[in-house]
Image (cartoon, rainbow, N blue to C red; front, side, top):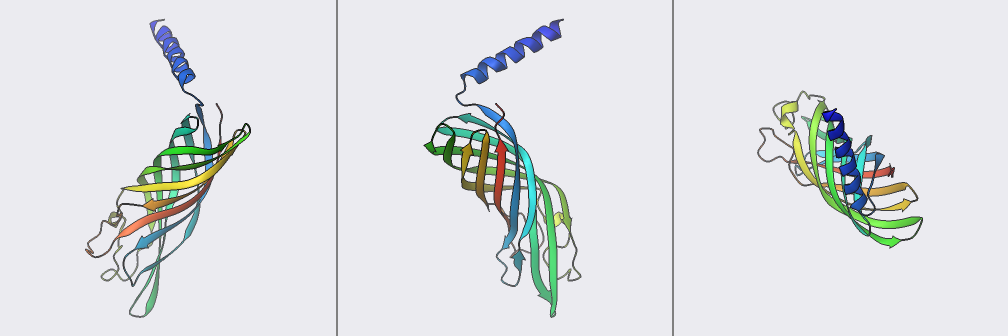
Length: 203
């Protein structure tokens, strides 16, 4: 009985708290990503990869709002180079949990629609790594999964539109931290991402 009373009090307290927050909403989201790995090595280039993402968001505020999110995102790219004249294509796929903490500003706010800008930092943690190991182990910088760090930071910036209960965003994610953890001292690797997402505001 005591546990039931505590649970009811907690639910009631949460309701009171959220009732005081202007324009609070929460909901799921899905998205389509185009990602690539940028490197400062002139002999190695990178091709794009395309993947989907899904997650959830919470929004607090009205004209200026805070929007934290939790998303499952596949990042990575294809590193391209050569070894003694033989071309090398190394595909790197990183399954990550990302936590953006975004601030949005509504530029136009009508009754059924609004246009906004959004941006903020993103923490990313890699939960699974897939990469094909090349034969050029001595001259190629990424030779194992351990050569890719598990955690990284980025900045997201973009714009979007809300129509009724739907929210559509287009954002670019700039990789800020080096995800390379290998032995090559003159090699750096950063994740960049272009994302289009659709969210549903449930509350």
